Structures are given as structure tokens and as C-alpha cells.
Length: 80
Image (tube, rainbow, N blue to C red; front, side):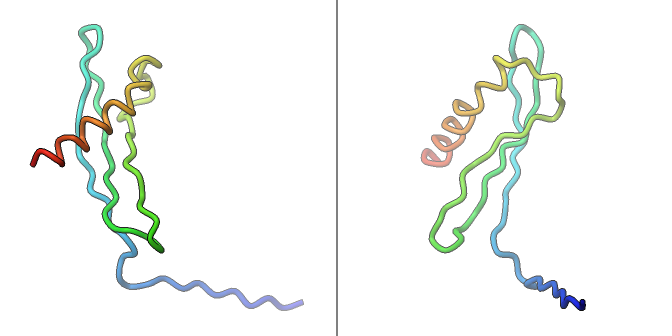
């Protein structure tokens, strides 16, 4: 039984992600993260921002602030 496998990759990017570094200070300790801001749409669906922490040892209370981080970032974009 023969299978035909083909991989196609577009030479131009479908969308771009801007990565912004940031941090939160919590109980005297600094926790750093990347805020990923996708630019563009795919079939008129807009991608959402995402927060990724630099290290796994981030307390749950800090990780739960991801919505606040994204909202703060979006407000900054509106001001500028």
C-alpha cells in the first residue's frame, strides 16, 4: 500500500507575533514573562494575546494575573 505524503509551506508568513518582555513583582520577588501579541487575522479571525512565563516556578496567584496583564497591555496600545 503506497501513500503519497506532501508538505507545503508558504514562503511568506501567515501572521506575525510581537513578543514583549514584562515582569510582575509579588511578595518582594520579580516574575518575568513574555506577552505575545499576534498581528493580523486568519480568515477574519483575530488572534488573542498570550502570556508565557519565563520559569515554571511562578506562584498560582501570579499566573492568575494573566488577564490583568493582557488588559493593561491593550490599554497601553490605546493610549499610544
